[in-house]
Length: 284
Image (cartoon, rainbow, N blue to C red):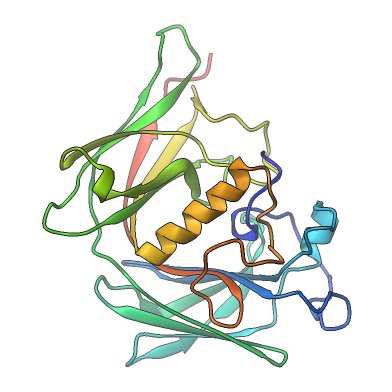
């Protein structure tokens, strides 16, 4: 299971690969987008092309599909900016398109336009209002255990329709926030407005250590509660379904994943966000 993850959540370093896939990839290859803009932050986009389901998924093949020379424009309807690309070796993948002028605001709509070779990919999203985390706590089943789970608490606004995603990042081990397994939530399933949820670690491609669904003593855990749109919820649920069924959601060559991308596949999402840091006991 740990082998599979959409490109946005993990690749390995890339150096001099040719990202012109017009002559080396199948006609079915499509542009794959994972882009987001959070309240209070700037846009980030990871870009690649799909890998046929019959291909071997390894680091070499994955790296050949990263796109790092596209023109990406983000707009809120009044202002726009062209994203720059940077090589960040602490992230996976290391090539990230980023904004620095257009900061996300709750309630606003944001469009994205991607121009690459002779292709144009577009999408629109909005940023829901953030919901604050009340607490996040590391809990063990037994005091002698060296592993445990994180339980988060927050109040779901009863007068609003909300969809959530809980993501975590272990400092020094994970370079990005990873969506928690079964961490996509629809408030229609809540029994009350006071929500308490157990969080399991999400799956990361090529992790530094062997994947486990729990956290461990010595971890410094960043826990993020995102509010998201229904389109984003549907995308992440379909992505998770691929993993549960041992399928390959990395650069998918078909349309099994839900998507709001016109002319490509993937997701362009706006998120509200609230983050808490959880300290675990020292590792023995």
